[in-house]
Image (cartoon, rainbow over all chains, first blue to last red):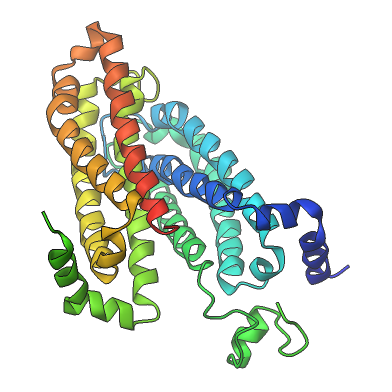
Length: 188
Length: 158
């Protein structure tokens, strides 16, 4: 089954239709998604700023990891749940959205950065835990995280706009390629 | 007091008009607004979580207040600089929007509260002997910020 067929089938499920047609459900879920962003990105930013040595240089990085990151993880779980529901409510259009695709790609990169940090950088934390300004690798991981998550918020916000939607033709060939849109054939 | 002429004037400013005439300006400014909102969330939460007895518990509240203050002020400035143009572009709609007034009222109250009572509680460490006072301060702060965030999101739906 192609991805498009999967999302088309999803669009026909009763709960997708109900979410889509409900007067308030979509707005409420979207609001929770945006509010949770403050918890998630806010705590991520504070940890990243500490990795960069730009905030609270006197507080050990491990203290941040232990006391702040659980809140980040809680925020992330809520974001994934609400974000998935938002995709379920508008499956085909979202799947073909250039910004949604960009956001998913950036999420993979952010995930790789988290993996890199926790498997390659953090294990040696005892050496730089109390440094006011941690070593270069640590700072780079923090900066990359800040930039990636900002871009994820940016592209996420842009999903709301229909500039490059498949049902708005003509589009440049590159746009139709990136959104796997086949004009005329697909009315989504 | 008739606010319409003032809101009309705001709506007709060159900035408001430029944003209305552009396909993408509103979207881009809004995204900047959103990223700064996230940063503000972090700066607020570091102090409020601590006042609630979680988060960076080993650090004194005065230290957290001082360390997050530049980031709080910085994000508030960017939020104003992006929020005002957004407002100018749809000032008339805002005048008749209930969420807009909830947002402005909460914003006024939370800034007032933050730089008077909350600052005092955090700077003097009052909450270390009186945990209930700390919790109450954090709950008021977070509730008022939630009013700002609720209004902000729902202006878009109104």
